[in-house]
Length: 429
Image (cartoon, rainbow, N blue to C red; front, side):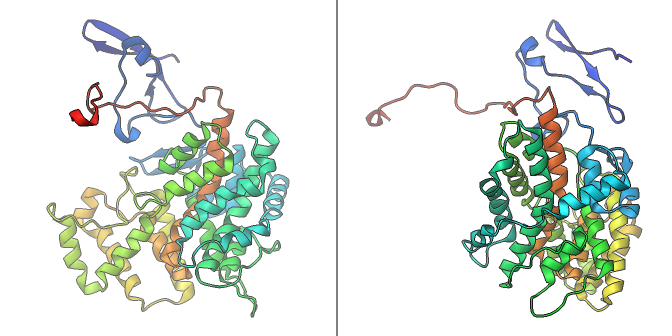
Protein backbone atom coordinates (compact mmCIF):
# COMPACT_ATOMS: atom_id res chain seq x y z
CA UNK A 1 0.00 0.00 0.00
CA UNK A 2 1.39 3.39 -1.07
CA UNK A 3 1.10 5.99 1.68
CA UNK A 4 0.36 9.66 1.13
CA UNK A 5 3.55 11.71 1.28
CA UNK A 6 4.46 14.02 4.15
CA UNK A 7 4.08 17.70 3.29
CA UNK A 8 6.82 20.05 4.43
CA UNK A 9 5.93 23.76 4.30
CA UNK A 10 8.83 26.22 3.99
CA UNK A 11 7.57 29.75 3.60
CA UNK A 12 5.21 29.70 0.64
CA UNK A 13 6.63 26.47 -0.74
CA UNK A 14 5.25 22.99 -0.06
CA UNK A 15 7.47 19.96 -0.58
CA UNK A 16 6.24 16.38 -0.79
CA UNK A 17 8.44 13.82 1.01
CA UNK A 18 7.74 10.11 0.38
CA UNK A 19 6.86 7.91 3.37
CA UNK A 20 8.34 4.41 3.39
CA UNK A 21 7.15 1.44 5.45
CA UNK A 22 9.17 -1.50 6.74
CA UNK A 23 7.84 -4.99 7.48
CA UNK A 24 7.42 -3.94 11.14
CA UNK A 25 8.23 -0.81 13.08
CA UNK A 26 7.62 2.91 12.45
CA UNK A 27 7.42 4.43 8.97
CA UNK A 28 10.18 6.75 7.79
CA UNK A 29 10.12 10.01 5.87
CA UNK A 30 12.46 9.88 2.87
CA UNK A 31 14.43 13.15 2.86
CA UNK A 32 16.94 12.05 0.21
CA UNK A 33 15.91 14.84 -2.18
CA UNK A 34 15.27 17.49 0.48
CA UNK A 35 18.43 19.50 -0.22
CA UNK A 36 17.93 19.42 -3.97
CA UNK A 37 14.35 20.66 -3.63
CA UNK A 38 14.80 23.20 -0.83
CA UNK A 39 18.49 23.90 -0.28
CA UNK A 40 18.02 22.77 3.35
CA UNK A 41 19.48 19.92 5.40
CA UNK A 42 17.97 18.29 8.46
CA UNK A 43 19.67 18.66 11.86
CA UNK A 44 19.74 15.49 13.99
CA UNK A 45 22.70 15.23 16.43
CA UNK A 46 23.58 11.59 17.02
CA UNK A 47 21.21 10.59 14.18
CA UNK A 48 18.67 9.50 16.82
CA UNK A 49 15.72 10.25 14.53
CA UNK A 50 17.37 9.25 11.26
CA UNK A 51 17.30 5.87 9.50
CA UNK A 52 20.72 5.65 7.87
CA UNK A 53 20.01 2.48 5.92
CA UNK A 54 17.50 -0.19 5.01
CA UNK A 55 18.25 -3.51 6.72
CA UNK A 56 16.79 -7.00 7.04
CA UNK A 57 19.01 -8.16 9.91
CA UNK A 58 17.90 -6.92 13.34
CA UNK A 59 14.78 -5.26 14.69
CA UNK A 60 14.37 -3.54 18.06
CA UNK A 61 11.19 -2.24 19.67
CA UNK A 62 12.51 -0.40 22.70
CA UNK A 63 9.07 0.47 24.07
CA UNK A 64 7.92 -3.14 24.10
CA UNK A 65 11.29 -4.68 24.98
CA UNK A 66 11.59 -6.70 21.75
CA UNK A 67 14.79 -7.80 19.98
CA UNK A 68 14.58 -9.92 16.81
CA UNK A 69 17.40 -11.44 14.76
CA UNK A 70 16.01 -11.99 11.23
CA UNK A 71 12.55 -12.14 12.81
CA UNK A 72 13.43 -14.61 15.59
CA UNK A 73 12.98 -13.42 19.22
CA UNK A 74 16.30 -13.25 21.07
CA UNK A 75 14.80 -15.29 23.92
CA UNK A 76 14.18 -18.29 21.65
CA UNK A 77 17.62 -18.18 20.05
CA UNK A 78 19.43 -17.91 23.40
CA UNK A 79 17.32 -20.62 25.00
CA UNK A 80 17.32 -23.22 22.23
CA UNK A 81 20.17 -22.46 19.84
CA UNK A 82 23.93 -21.99 19.95
CA UNK A 83 26.14 -19.13 18.86
CA UNK A 84 27.30 -20.53 15.51
CA UNK A 85 23.68 -21.24 14.58
CA UNK A 86 22.96 -17.57 15.32
CA UNK A 87 25.99 -16.59 13.21
CA UNK A 88 24.57 -18.53 10.27
CA UNK A 89 21.19 -16.84 10.75
CA UNK A 90 22.67 -13.34 10.82
CA UNK A 91 24.95 -13.95 7.83
CA UNK A 92 22.59 -15.82 5.52
CA UNK A 93 19.11 -14.89 6.73
CA UNK A 94 17.91 -18.33 7.79
CA UNK A 95 18.56 -20.87 10.52
CA UNK A 96 20.65 -23.70 9.09
CA UNK A 97 19.46 -27.21 8.36
CA UNK A 98 21.39 -29.99 10.10
CA UNK A 99 23.63 -30.39 7.03
CA UNK A 100 24.17 -26.64 6.66
CA UNK A 101 25.01 -26.30 10.35
CA UNK A 102 27.55 -29.14 10.21
CA UNK A 103 29.19 -27.52 7.17
CA UNK A 104 29.20 -24.01 8.69
CA UNK A 105 30.53 -25.21 12.06
CA UNK A 106 33.28 -27.11 10.26
CA UNK A 107 34.29 -24.12 8.14
CA UNK A 108 34.55 -21.85 11.18
CA UNK A 109 36.38 -24.46 13.28
CA UNK A 110 38.96 -25.09 10.53
CA UNK A 111 39.81 -21.39 10.37
CA UNK A 112 40.42 -20.73 14.07
CA UNK A 113 44.22 -20.81 13.89
CA UNK A 114 45.97 -17.56 13.03
CA UNK A 115 49.11 -17.09 10.97
CA UNK A 116 52.08 -18.06 13.14
CA UNK A 117 53.83 -14.77 12.42
CA UNK A 118 51.02 -12.99 14.28
CA UNK A 119 52.45 -14.37 17.52
CA UNK A 120 55.56 -12.30 16.87
CA UNK A 121 53.36 -9.30 16.04
CA UNK A 122 52.05 -9.44 19.62
CA UNK A 123 55.51 -9.09 21.12
CA UNK A 124 55.63 -5.52 19.84
CA UNK A 125 53.11 -4.48 22.50
CA UNK A 126 53.91 -3.60 26.08
CA UNK A 127 52.74 -6.21 28.57
CA UNK A 128 50.41 -3.69 30.21
CA UNK A 129 48.74 -2.67 26.93
CA UNK A 130 44.96 -2.68 27.18
CA UNK A 131 43.62 -5.79 25.39
CA UNK A 132 41.27 -3.61 23.33
CA UNK A 133 44.19 -1.65 21.88
CA UNK A 134 45.79 -4.98 20.98
CA UNK A 135 42.52 -6.11 19.34
CA UNK A 136 42.20 -2.96 17.23
CA UNK A 137 45.76 -3.42 15.97
CA UNK A 138 45.72 -7.19 15.46
CA UNK A 139 42.36 -7.32 13.65
CA UNK A 140 43.43 -4.45 11.41
CA UNK A 141 46.71 -6.29 10.77
CA UNK A 142 44.82 -9.32 9.45
CA UNK A 143 44.64 -7.49 6.12
CA UNK A 144 48.44 -7.78 5.94
CA UNK A 145 48.37 -11.51 6.70
CA UNK A 146 45.30 -12.48 4.67
CA UNK A 147 45.48 -10.16 1.67
CA UNK A 148 43.95 -12.88 -0.50
CA UNK A 149 40.52 -11.97 0.95
CA UNK A 150 40.47 -8.17 0.85
CA UNK A 151 38.84 -7.60 -2.57
CA UNK A 152 35.34 -6.48 -1.60
CA UNK A 153 34.13 -6.81 -5.21
CA UNK A 154 34.73 -10.57 -5.17
CA UNK A 155 31.86 -12.46 -3.44
CA UNK A 156 34.13 -15.45 -2.73
CA UNK A 157 36.75 -13.27 -1.04
CA UNK A 158 34.01 -11.54 1.01
CA UNK A 159 32.79 -14.95 2.16
CA UNK A 160 36.29 -16.15 3.07
CA UNK A 161 37.02 -12.93 4.99
CA UNK A 162 33.74 -13.29 6.88
CA UNK A 163 34.46 -16.86 8.01
CA UNK A 164 38.05 -15.97 8.86
CA UNK A 165 37.03 -13.15 11.16
CA UNK A 166 34.32 -15.10 12.98
CA UNK A 167 36.82 -17.91 13.49
CA UNK A 168 40.00 -15.95 14.26
CA UNK A 169 38.81 -13.00 16.36
CA UNK A 170 38.28 -15.28 19.42
CA UNK A 171 41.81 -16.65 18.93
CA UNK A 172 43.21 -13.12 18.79
CA UNK A 173 41.16 -12.16 21.86
CA UNK A 174 42.51 -15.12 23.82
CA UNK A 175 46.04 -14.24 22.69
CA UNK A 176 45.54 -10.66 23.88
CA UNK A 177 44.44 -11.99 27.27
CA UNK A 178 47.31 -14.45 27.59
CA UNK A 179 49.83 -11.81 26.56
CA UNK A 180 48.51 -9.39 29.19
CA UNK A 181 49.02 -11.91 31.99
CA UNK A 182 52.35 -13.25 30.78
CA UNK A 183 51.18 -16.76 29.89
CA UNK A 184 51.93 -18.70 26.69
CA UNK A 185 49.40 -18.70 23.88
CA UNK A 186 47.13 -21.74 23.69
CA UNK A 187 46.28 -23.05 20.25
CA UNK A 188 42.64 -23.74 19.34
CA UNK A 189 41.32 -27.29 19.58
CA UNK A 190 39.05 -28.46 16.78
CA UNK A 191 37.21 -31.03 18.91
CA UNK A 192 35.63 -28.27 21.02
CA UNK A 193 32.71 -26.04 20.16
CA UNK A 194 33.12 -22.29 19.69
CA UNK A 195 32.65 -21.10 23.27
CA UNK A 196 34.35 -24.06 24.95
CA UNK A 197 37.33 -23.56 22.66
CA UNK A 198 37.53 -19.89 23.63
CA UNK A 199 37.46 -20.68 27.37
CA UNK A 200 40.24 -23.22 26.91
CA UNK A 201 42.40 -20.77 24.94
CA UNK A 202 41.94 -18.22 27.74
CA UNK A 203 42.40 -20.39 30.84
CA UNK A 204 44.38 -23.51 29.92
CA UNK A 205 48.12 -23.72 30.60
CA UNK A 206 50.58 -26.19 29.03
CA UNK A 207 51.62 -27.75 32.34
CA UNK A 208 48.27 -29.35 33.15
CA UNK A 209 45.08 -30.65 31.56
CA UNK A 210 42.13 -28.30 31.30
CA UNK A 211 38.55 -29.50 31.34
CA UNK A 212 35.97 -27.01 30.09
CA UNK A 213 33.07 -26.57 32.49
CA UNK A 214 29.94 -27.11 30.32
CA UNK A 215 27.84 -24.73 32.44
CA UNK A 216 30.35 -21.92 31.89
CA UNK A 217 30.70 -22.75 28.19
CA UNK A 218 26.93 -22.63 27.75
CA UNK A 219 26.76 -19.34 29.69
CA UNK A 220 29.44 -17.78 27.49
CA UNK A 221 27.71 -19.05 24.36
CA UNK A 222 24.51 -17.37 25.53
CA UNK A 223 26.41 -14.12 26.20
CA UNK A 224 27.75 -14.26 22.66
CA UNK A 225 24.24 -14.76 21.23
CA UNK A 226 22.83 -11.85 23.23
CA UNK A 227 25.57 -9.50 22.00
CA UNK A 228 25.77 -10.70 18.37
CA UNK A 229 23.95 -7.72 16.85
CA UNK A 230 21.94 -4.72 17.99
CA UNK A 231 20.80 -2.84 14.90
CA UNK A 232 22.46 0.47 13.89
CA UNK A 233 24.36 1.24 17.10
CA UNK A 234 27.54 3.34 17.18
CA UNK A 235 30.02 0.57 16.34
CA UNK A 236 27.82 -0.98 13.64
CA UNK A 237 27.32 2.44 12.07
CA UNK A 238 31.10 2.90 12.21
CA UNK A 239 31.63 -0.39 10.36
CA UNK A 240 29.11 0.62 7.71
CA UNK A 241 30.61 4.11 7.38
CA UNK A 242 34.13 2.70 6.99
CA UNK A 243 32.86 0.09 4.56
CA UNK A 244 31.06 2.71 2.46
CA UNK A 245 34.46 4.02 1.35
CA UNK A 246 35.43 0.61 -0.02
CA UNK A 247 37.82 -0.20 2.83
CA UNK A 248 38.78 -3.86 3.25
CA UNK A 249 36.69 -5.91 5.72
CA UNK A 250 39.45 -6.29 8.32
CA UNK A 251 39.90 -2.51 8.48
CA UNK A 252 36.14 -2.05 8.84
CA UNK A 253 35.86 -4.51 11.74
CA UNK A 254 38.93 -2.93 13.40
CA UNK A 255 37.11 0.42 13.16
CA UNK A 256 34.08 -1.16 14.83
CA UNK A 257 36.25 -2.50 17.66
CA UNK A 258 37.77 0.96 18.17
CA UNK A 259 34.29 2.48 18.48
CA UNK A 260 33.13 -0.30 20.80
CA UNK A 261 36.01 0.53 23.15
CA UNK A 262 34.23 3.73 24.27
CA UNK A 263 32.77 3.55 27.80
CA UNK A 264 29.41 4.83 26.57
CA UNK A 265 29.13 1.80 24.27
CA UNK A 266 30.99 -1.46 24.86
CA UNK A 267 32.59 -0.39 28.13
CA UNK A 268 29.28 -0.15 29.99
CA UNK A 269 29.63 -3.51 31.77
CA UNK A 270 33.11 -2.55 32.93
CA UNK A 271 31.67 0.74 34.24
CA UNK A 272 28.91 -1.17 36.06
CA UNK A 273 31.44 -3.37 37.83
CA UNK A 274 33.55 -0.33 38.72
CA UNK A 275 30.45 1.22 40.31
CA UNK A 276 29.85 -1.91 42.38
CA UNK A 277 33.42 -1.63 43.62
CA UNK A 278 32.85 2.01 44.51
CA UNK A 279 29.80 1.09 46.58
CA UNK A 280 31.86 -1.63 48.21
CA UNK A 281 29.48 -3.16 50.77
CA UNK A 282 25.74 -3.76 51.09
CA UNK A 283 25.37 -1.34 54.02
CA UNK A 284 26.46 1.56 51.76
CA UNK A 285 23.77 0.91 49.13
CA UNK A 286 21.13 3.26 50.67
CA UNK A 287 23.62 6.12 50.43
CA UNK A 288 24.15 5.54 46.71
CA UNK A 289 20.46 4.96 46.03
CA UNK A 290 19.77 8.33 47.65
CA UNK A 291 22.43 9.95 45.45
CA UNK A 292 20.96 8.31 42.33
CA UNK A 293 17.56 9.83 43.13
CA UNK A 294 19.01 13.30 43.71
CA UNK A 295 18.73 15.35 40.52
CA UNK A 296 21.52 17.64 41.69
CA UNK A 297 24.01 14.79 42.24
CA UNK A 298 26.03 13.79 39.12
CA UNK A 299 26.27 10.18 40.36
CA UNK A 300 24.56 7.63 38.11
CA UNK A 301 23.82 3.99 38.74
CA UNK A 302 25.60 2.16 35.92
CA UNK A 303 23.98 -0.94 34.50
CA UNK A 304 20.40 0.30 34.94
CA UNK A 305 18.08 1.47 32.19
CA UNK A 306 18.94 1.60 28.49
CA UNK A 307 18.96 4.30 25.82
CA UNK A 308 16.88 2.17 23.44
CA UNK A 309 14.83 -0.04 25.75
CA UNK A 310 12.15 1.84 27.68
CA UNK A 311 10.96 -1.50 29.02
CA UNK A 312 12.91 -4.44 30.47
CA UNK A 313 15.81 -5.23 28.13
CA UNK A 314 14.88 -8.71 26.79
CA UNK A 315 18.56 -9.70 26.89
CA UNK A 316 18.75 -8.81 30.59
CA UNK A 317 16.07 -11.36 31.49
CA UNK A 318 18.13 -14.15 29.92
CA UNK A 319 21.37 -12.77 31.35
CA UNK A 320 19.87 -12.63 34.85
CA UNK A 321 19.14 -16.36 34.80
CA UNK A 322 22.55 -17.09 33.28
CA UNK A 323 24.28 -15.06 36.00
CA UNK A 324 22.63 -17.03 38.78
CA UNK A 325 23.43 -20.33 37.02
CA UNK A 326 27.13 -19.39 36.85
CA UNK A 327 27.29 -18.19 40.47
CA UNK A 328 25.58 -21.38 41.63
CA UNK A 329 27.88 -23.60 39.56
CA UNK A 330 30.99 -21.88 40.93
CA UNK A 331 29.66 -21.86 44.49
CA UNK A 332 30.24 -18.12 44.87
CA UNK A 333 28.39 -16.92 47.95
CA UNK A 334 30.65 -14.59 49.90
CA UNK A 335 31.96 -12.13 47.32
CA UNK A 336 31.20 -8.58 48.62
CA UNK A 337 30.86 -7.24 45.08
CA UNK A 338 28.31 -9.86 44.16
CA UNK A 339 26.44 -9.24 47.41
CA UNK A 340 26.16 -5.58 46.45
CA UNK A 341 25.00 -6.52 42.94
CA UNK A 342 22.30 -8.90 44.15
CA UNK A 343 20.93 -6.37 46.65
CA UNK A 344 20.92 -3.62 44.02
CA UNK A 345 19.06 -5.99 41.70
CA UNK A 346 16.45 -6.67 44.39
CA UNK A 347 15.95 -2.96 45.07
CA UNK A 348 15.68 -2.06 41.37
CA UNK A 349 12.98 -4.66 40.79
CA UNK A 350 10.87 -3.56 43.78
CA UNK A 351 11.55 0.13 44.45
CA UNK A 352 8.79 2.42 43.13
CA UNK A 353 11.34 5.00 41.91
CA UNK A 354 13.15 2.46 39.71
CA UNK A 355 9.89 0.93 38.46
CA UNK A 356 8.38 4.31 37.62
CA UNK A 357 11.53 5.44 35.80
CA UNK A 358 11.88 1.98 34.18
CA UNK A 359 15.44 1.71 35.47
CA UNK A 360 15.62 -2.05 35.23
CA UNK A 361 18.97 -3.85 35.47
CA UNK A 362 20.27 -4.12 31.90
CA UNK A 363 22.46 -6.68 30.18
CA UNK A 364 25.65 -4.81 31.11
CA UNK A 365 24.83 -5.10 34.81
CA UNK A 366 24.52 -8.89 34.65
CA UNK A 367 27.23 -9.62 32.07
CA UNK A 368 29.88 -7.81 34.10
CA UNK A 369 29.06 -9.87 37.19
CA UNK A 370 29.04 -13.10 35.17
CA UNK A 371 32.33 -12.49 33.37
CA UNK A 372 34.04 -11.55 36.62
CA UNK A 373 32.81 -14.75 38.24
CA UNK A 374 34.13 -16.75 35.27
CA UNK A 375 37.61 -15.32 35.84
CA UNK A 376 37.87 -12.55 33.24
CA UNK A 377 39.41 -9.23 34.37
CA UNK A 378 37.42 -6.08 33.61
CA UNK A 379 39.87 -5.14 30.85
CA UNK A 380 38.63 -8.17 28.90
CA UNK A 381 34.91 -7.42 29.13
CA UNK A 382 34.77 -5.23 26.02
CA UNK A 383 37.02 -7.68 24.18
CA UNK A 384 34.45 -10.42 24.71
CA UNK A 385 31.78 -8.03 23.49
CA UNK A 386 33.86 -7.56 20.31
CA UNK A 387 34.15 -11.33 19.85
CA UNK A 388 30.36 -11.64 19.98
CA UNK A 389 29.60 -8.57 17.87
CA UNK A 390 32.00 -9.48 15.06
CA UNK A 391 29.36 -11.57 13.27
CA UNK A 392 26.82 -8.74 13.49
CA UNK A 393 29.31 -6.27 12.07
CA UNK A 394 30.14 -8.66 9.23
CA UNK A 395 26.48 -9.32 8.44
CA UNK A 396 25.81 -5.57 8.34
CA UNK A 397 28.92 -4.96 6.22
CA UNK A 398 27.95 -7.67 3.72
CA UNK A 399 24.41 -6.31 3.50
CA UNK A 400 25.80 -2.83 2.82
CA UNK A 401 28.09 -4.09 0.04
CA UNK A 402 25.15 -5.84 -1.65
CA UNK A 403 22.83 -2.84 -1.35
CA UNK A 404 22.48 -1.10 -4.76
CA UNK A 405 21.40 2.09 -2.99
CA UNK A 406 24.56 2.22 -0.89
CA UNK A 407 26.60 5.42 -1.09
CA UNK A 408 29.71 6.61 0.68
CA UNK A 409 28.70 8.05 4.05
CA UNK A 410 28.80 11.83 4.11
CA UNK A 411 26.80 13.48 6.93
CA UNK A 412 26.15 17.20 6.63
CA UNK A 413 26.66 19.85 9.30
CA UNK A 414 25.30 23.11 10.65
CA UNK A 415 28.31 25.43 10.45
CA UNK A 416 28.55 27.92 13.33
CA UNK A 417 32.16 29.10 12.93
CA UNK A 418 33.58 32.37 11.63
CA UNK A 419 32.15 33.70 8.35
CA UNK A 420 34.48 34.22 5.38
CA UNK A 421 37.32 36.65 6.16
CA UNK A 422 40.55 37.79 4.52
CA UNK A 423 44.06 36.76 5.43
CA UNK A 424 46.24 39.44 7.02
CA UNK A 425 50.07 39.36 6.99
CA UNK A 426 51.49 38.57 10.40
CA UNK A 427 52.71 42.14 10.90
CA UNK A 428 49.21 43.52 10.47
CA UNK A 429 47.46 41.25 12.97
